[in-house]
Amino acid sequence: MFETVTVTNAAPSPEEASTPVLGQVNYLAPSDAKPAIFIDQDGTRHVRDDVRYETRTVRVRDGRPAADGYSLDRNGVRLVRHDTAVADFYDDAEVAAVYFPEVERLIKQETGAAEVVIFDHTRRVSGSEDGPVRRPVPNVHGDYTEKSGPQRVRDLIDPDEAEDWLDGRYAVVNVWRPIRGPIERSPLAFVDGRTVAEDDFVPMDLVYPDRTGEIYAFTHSPAHDWVYFPRMTRDEALLIKTFDSSTDGRVRFSAHAAIEVPTTPDHASPRESIEIRALVRFAEA
Image (cartoon, rainbow, N blue to C red; front, side, top):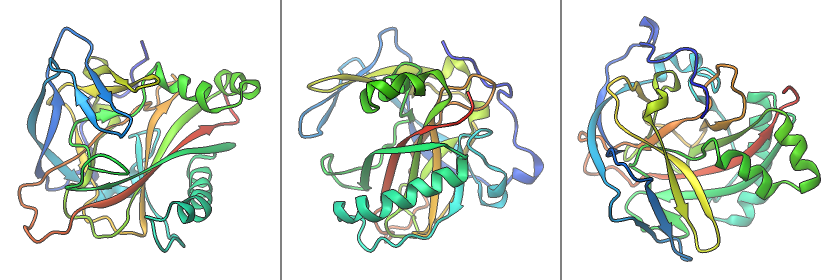
């Protein structure tokens, strides 16, 4: 099993404190069996019958007053100002030609990475069905696990180079941003990585027609410190560390979810967002 971070269940410092909102997220209900989600060829998802989620109302702090203090290694996320030349985020060709290089430069700038390999992008619109454009995920989850992080390297990196990656320090970083803003409906929120304990992590199988992956689901803990950056705009990006091979005490995984806030105005536009996933290799071990 992985090592936990050195600062566990740490309370926010006074400068981080802010008036929270109440939001709803779905935690995995405790179970003796390993949970699984089955994904059809068209992207439709089916949760196994014995998998149960429980909706919890959580206090979610506004992270903007202390945004400069958040980091990937300390908290698992970082908010940055990031202008883009992309005109249409629904144009795959433009996203690949313009946005991928922008994101590669951003990740290198923010992490000091020696190499960045972008391998996936997903658009999400609240109220949509799963498919080419997917819906926001209200289930608390982490995209990669102790098992699936290394497997992603083996899947995507040339075998002649993969062992060099696996012998050093590498990570998976997501870059999330609004397609349109400000985001009012289904904003993305995260649990400060310092407040997640080892027992909160639950490996979950993702069963595709041709392979089986693994993510983390999470059970509820009152120690979880939920944070979000309200009304994110198109010129902002949220970096999320979803896996880190390092076991030196830095945060390695990020628990996150789309939150539903009861005070969201009825006239609020659907949330539209895009996320990029990238393998990141560091020069140091």
